[in-house]
Length: 150
Image (cartoon, rainbow, N blue to C red):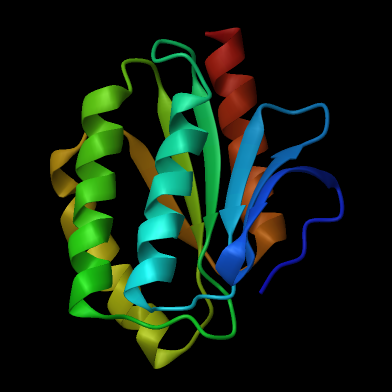
């Protein structure tokens, strides 16, 4: 699980679900330990929606979904809620949207990677998967530069 010392904590919820904003950058992050109980999944999805809604619909959005927590798993319920979140982001966002997803190199993460690629085929935003927070943030910084200079 990536730590985010360079980021300001916006909200901290049960199940160690955290919403951050990187200081001096328009990058927001949602992270957790990966608890797959229904309650934790529901709270994670609602916090992710709130994070997306914190940026006006037509303003570029740059986000990180850190799924590298030690308890990260996959469940049918989690997959169903992830699909709802993907659809929500696709419908809600009107401006450029860039999401960096951080996964570990585990077998479960490979399953999540495949599911994420299938789920995002029908939405109009750009998502990339990374194994380190440094790579994820570097990519988002590049997207910020390209988006702001266009």
